[in-house]
Image 1 (cartoon, each protein chain N blue to C red):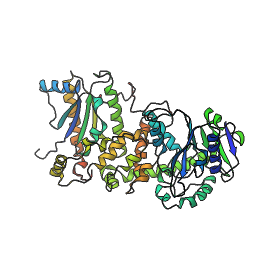
Image 2 (image 1 turned 30 degrees about the vertical axis):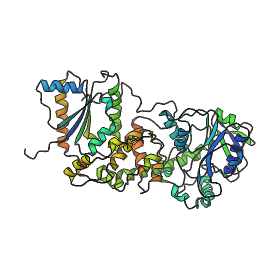
Image 3 (image 1 turned 90 degrees about the horizontal axis):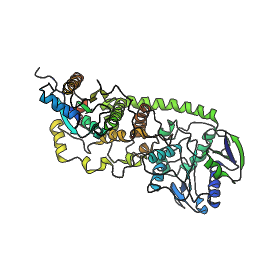
Image 4 (image 1 turned 135 degrees about the vertical axis):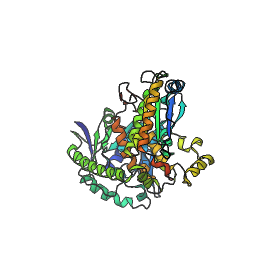
Length: 370
Length: 141
């Protein structure tokens, strides 16, 4: 049983009030949350240090403008934070951050994670016209009745890791009745409990609504299987892959948005990977034609070799693809099979080493002996 | 026999075992398949999965990774990393249905000229049976 803090406000207001409490009581020096632009359209992650700037904060807004795992890794790349901050993020973002920390790209120290049982987020393109605000209340209704929201991103529709195991505080959203009048914060760790100490609200011993979550998870699993099977059929062999990536413009947006792809100088953007006249000539002599830009498929399969083991399935790659290639579905699917091979769930255990960084002498013993 | 398919196989051989083993096979005048093109690397742990992917996407019919037997690595543990990478590659190729059988891994020590001849011949025959890599004729790679 975990402690639950119930605040008598709508879930968004309740969480914002909690963040305000944290800043005012100086329990944290800053807060990272989604925030509306002052006066204009647009919503983005922001680091807030003054309580009055929480005006316009929308911590649970169903949108992922960037994977905040990547943002937080950049924030802590040179060393851990000196003062504690509270971070409101989605479960896949937390998992991405943990994967990055395992790759020495940041630190979890002095960060307190507030996450949610995540129903999913809308595609980025829907945020452009400002209609999302109108959708937000409908979203809340659908969430509290445990419905599956059809408009959310395919990556979210097929996500089964929507409970943030490593968060200090979990905001209960999925199938949590009364989101418009109460905000339930599950204090998932000692840090979380210390943080909530002194906050006005009703405390009780309670667990996450596990039955509803299991039911939700079953539905998601079915959807995931179906999506992956379709993708597997579609991308079978080289013809299938070319069919999927034939319209790739080689902009590398997927890699730039990917939280796991952290390399500042990506191999695929480096000089050794440039297509030189002589390599074109060799292709032309053999095939009589060569695609320009060259090497787009090499980029995707190569990127799979680099990051599939840590793919958290956040779907950012797919969300930013300008030509709407379902990159994320393919990467999640391949990622899942790689992760199964190495019995690894990215972002679940902080002290579990990366499969590509370690080995066991006794494993795969029959390989190479034949 | 005139039109028999001769595959193009790229072999990445570690300097200390497999490459020396290949040398020994040559000195002993053992049969080595003509389809194999050897690239020497200092350790099988140097073989970036990208090397293998690039070779396949550029139309190689097969790719072999060869190194020291487990426990015998000149750098203590490079071949263990290579083995994990090989499994990683196999899994990726398998889940994309890109014929994981086209990649092979073999341990050959510096004194195993015979074994070098045997494993390369077997792999070459396997690829020959499989036929040319369909990626060979594709333009959009």
